[in-house]
Image (tube, rainbow, N blue to C red; front, side, top):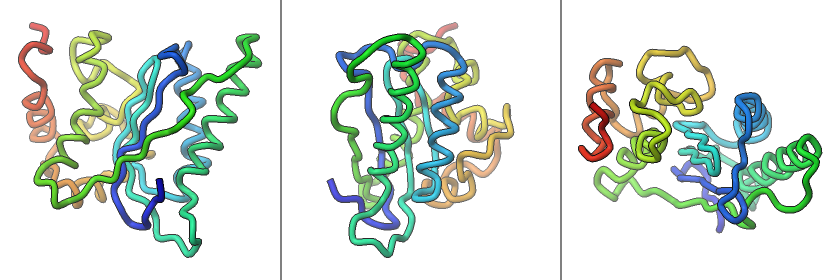
Length: 187
């Protein structure tokens, strides 16, 4: 897939054979540091969610003077170096991630789909039964948008502009909870 400059993408991948890719809290944080180092120079991160066996990012690709946008190669660097570190630490060999990282172009002409995708990313831990509420999962950007954490990885102003997110944290929390189907809400 070719990445176009200044376009919105949902980028995701999972563990090879759906295996775990994050084993400890330190692994999640190590992966995010690699994202900050290698991906942030080529895209604005609008949202993310890291799950035990997969990850999602919603990004706005940067302007690029190069013919081939460097965003996907940057993700390749993150995944390759992360896999090497995990393989060494856990004394394992072989592929950690599936062969191809997916990058779905999101069009602003698709009604509310980009905004729905944004909320979908954050809902993953609740839908998977890992936590009972969105704010319990520490490895997503939900806490930053909801005002529970002051993270700096996501460009919240850009996300609010492009996705027409609610302007206040309380309105954001209400919208996010309203996006979760009733069968996933634990009382």
